[in-house]
Image (cartoon, rainbow, N blue to C red; front, side):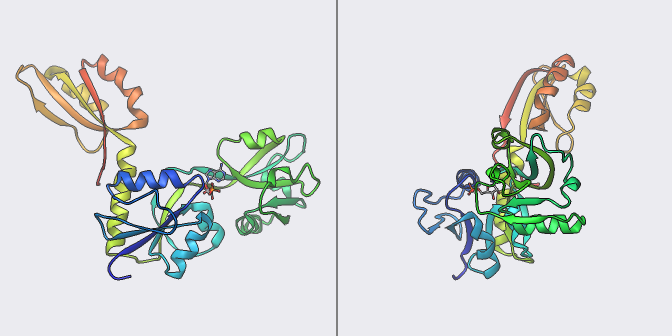
Length: 282
Ligand code: AMP
């Protein structure tokens, strides 16, 4: 393997495209069309190993790969002790318990004595055991949402992102067992190039969440405008040719941007420019 680090990533499914975009956004150059097995980065000592999403934790645990990107739900299901080195803010979903719409259960505790169908057996068993809720787990490998209709189970535990599949199948959520998103995992204590990869990917994730905002502001109202801009530390103030005006530059959370623009304008800001941030290294 030499000095090259091996990063295992999904070779298909819903985490594939956002993972390839993340790596490209981090500036890594590799051939993402060739996903048969390994793609070597041209500009960093990193080999991308394309694998089944479900196998990635095992690859990292066994040392076949040095790091991996997979769903947090799969790490929890595996029970393996890997470090989550970065939360990647895509592939968000929840492991939820649901019952037929007309069933009496209102909360997860109401499932005591029920049969629960799931393909997330270990996580579900641990969750119910930890809370002293006695259930019979019916392990299925797929199409879990039809189990109640087929008389196989009283309830299900399944991954949900919008909830529409449950709705279509006449199911009602009664609680969340786990919140998940894509994560970067590594064996405890991994360092060297592994730390560089963490820094790179975290910089993309942090950059995506923020915007760089530039505006002109009357010097007389600067304090008012500064108070509106929490961002990263204090904003940069740049003098302008017109002595009574300054340019204010700040990094703001993307989520807060639209709420902020009206207040900035009301405080006298003009010519407001909003730019994306490619990488943010904190
Ligand atoms: P896939 O390879 O398409 O089966 O996706 C596997 C992973 O995608 C899951 O283990 C989750 O981490 C993640 N995921 C995100 N949203 C959902 C969803 N609505 N249903 C199933 N998996 C999801």
